[in-house]
Length: 325
Length: 176
Image 1: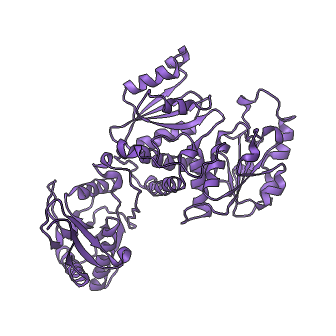
Image 2: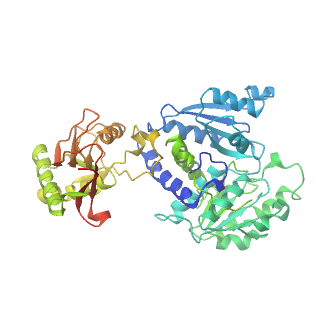
Image 3: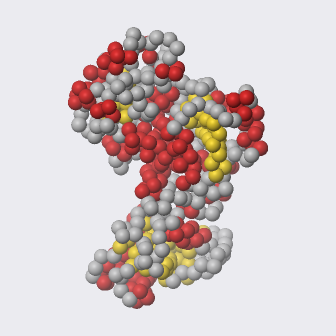
């Protein structure tokens, strides 16, 4: 494993499977009456969140605490960041405090990579979402949830058909998921209005469809993406009502799905826009379970990045089957 | 490479340990037997089968992975986790037997005791090992020993089991 987790491209196929297997063992511990492990005792993990977040930050915090690490939460509001402190000075401060890992969410794509590449700090950097680039732990927990339901006891997701629906353009979750699901052998179809697909999407390892009805019926997983109003300065579709009709998951489309197929959403949901309330709360929905699995997956990532010696982690493997997005 | 136990030696040792466990605990009602993966888990399954056969009733059994409880985690690359399976009913108030293959520094057993502490309070905890090679670094001892093998620190004791290695034997590698 690399010392940092910035992108799914930092992981080999073996690394990804190792994370999912480790998470599966750790999930059993989450069911036990006592949930604490002493593994990261004395290590300091900093949650550095420049953007708002509920589940990712809480999930990382819970994961670190269950491994007995000390957690420092650091959000842009209420810190010197709102006084205009630079990323570099923030990093130097964290280094001076002895942070062993920094979990960073930032509005600018590439901010975690900058934190990792400059020699500002010695700890591991974990990307918890940067701009419209990647959100690797979300993809890992999605893959974990899919594997648990549809490929129990197997290593990867070979042959599963996954539809990712909605605002692919602004979605870091979609980018990480495309890379990871492809790496694990799934067949990914993107469904979105052409205005919400990024430039260069034809070079991604995916199929593209512009109508949801055709895809829903033959998919094993339907993953809905949030319409990110905060990133939408321009008009990407005529009206929310029209988007919802064409690309939203509603009761009728839910009936068209295979009975074993899963409904997923990374949250937070816009109920009534990209997903109707009855779809979100249906038996096929694993949206709440995704959150629970997030803790196990993040425990696995923290253990595998921080649990071993710094020296052995340096011997990272050469990246293979790399797809550039 | 010296062969110090063959398949027959190993099965005789395990049979004796099974009898000793039953004798010490006056039956098997309150017993829970937990093996430490990888090879300790196979040995514990064999001992549990023997106890069940001798006492003619099933015995509660499981596995206990101690990776996350090791005190030398920082000195080596992170290892994949192995399965932990605690039998229904838990370990509270039971006479608990930990089974491992090679007993060396005692650090694995310390980690196992820590792991158990997170799960409940057994009435007693006893330790059964196939090979005791000495060189303890902690005040921990075994209750049931298959074979005491005096070794030097440089030697490597290898336990091979049919379940994963294809044959049953105990080997010593390094200078003798």
